[in-house]
Image 1 (cartoon, one colour):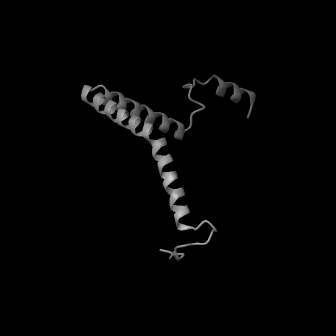
Image 2 (tube, one colour):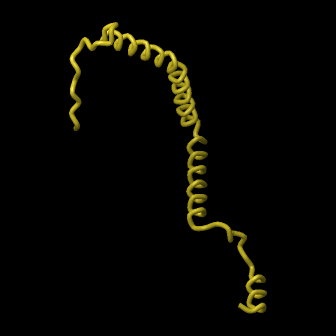
Image 3 (tube, rainbow, N blue to C red):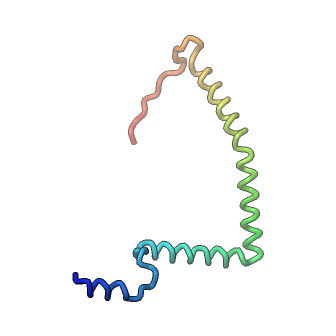
Length: 100
């Protein structure tokens, strides 16, 4: 390429998006559309109330989760101790697992 061709190429106007590829532009478009849809959805009072109620229920369930895990762990330990005697021998017969 000659210097004259390089100079002409450098002087051409650009749209400022030389660094964005097709995938990037598509993701930006989809992200903008999703953001717009979320704003439109939340602009309605009853939808905001519905989302707020869902968030409250989720927060309450999450607050009870640690206690439920502790109880399940305790029950599992008791079941294990009950299934196996103190000497490590299995009390119940072993079950064979069949591949499905």
